[in-house]
Length: 177
Length: 227
Image (cartoon, rainbow over all chains, first blue to last red; front, side, top):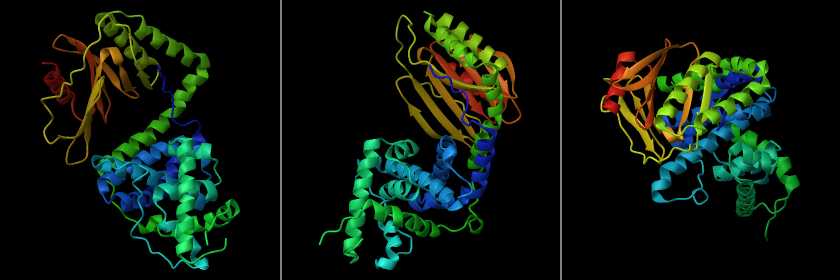
């Protein structure tokens, strides 16, 4: 038997949550809708994402607004991909097989100067894990908890994401890192 | 020539890559999606739940042991009974206690030692308030749920649980509680300005209706379920 006492631990966290909602709901919707292309589902994804954000409030430092935006976008994209895959389930496409790549984003040439653009080419389920690890500095265990996937799954996505990046960079003529 | 990305490279370039990635998302002020009333309602509820947290914290602060005691109480409440009648009596004892002592509680009982297992049969309301239609439903071996929505994105949520495998969330803050009967079945009606809830303990099931409609409408829905 579970006693569900509360979602949030402190007054500070509570107000932080409301501020996050006001500051990022539109961008989160935008991020979800460019994956789902369905207004109703995108709103559901944003709501689900906020439920997950509650569980990770202590990880969010509002003073680092770029990191905060990055974090909430990763969460909502991950939820949106979940929704997207559920919708695809009828076609028996598994999570790992179904690699969603954002289509409507401007992409730069793969020169060394535009190496950042390679991230746009990565399937979202790989890039979200890579961003959490290498841009936000989380350990695999923490990433697993944030995204509610197994540590093994995190490890595999990092490996596959890196291979994907290596392939993209090779194709783009980038040889030295 | 094969290429191998090093950890150092990824740590060095990924923050910038993420910034580039995020730059494709317009600033908040530049976006103007009009969220549906349903979404805004759900978010208001979520934020309201947070506002309740201090109450829950006070409850825990009052005595950390209280939570443990309550868990034990609930466990005992549902695991020592051997009949549906006894379970019903205990259930309302707990509902009343929850209503008076705390504002929100979710409790789940995976299995109770009733003498005979009951096969789950979903009961769908044959009456739904005008303007509402089902937008989602689901069924498992122990429960059934359905969500009804009207054109204004207001939602009625219905859940049916096997009494032997009860899982239910009660939200009783700022509500009044009233004992009601639907036919021979006893229930409780919780009401506040925004949302009404009706819990009914039937023969083998507990029915939970929740939505921003009148008591009469919820009662009609409940009647259509058990009659």
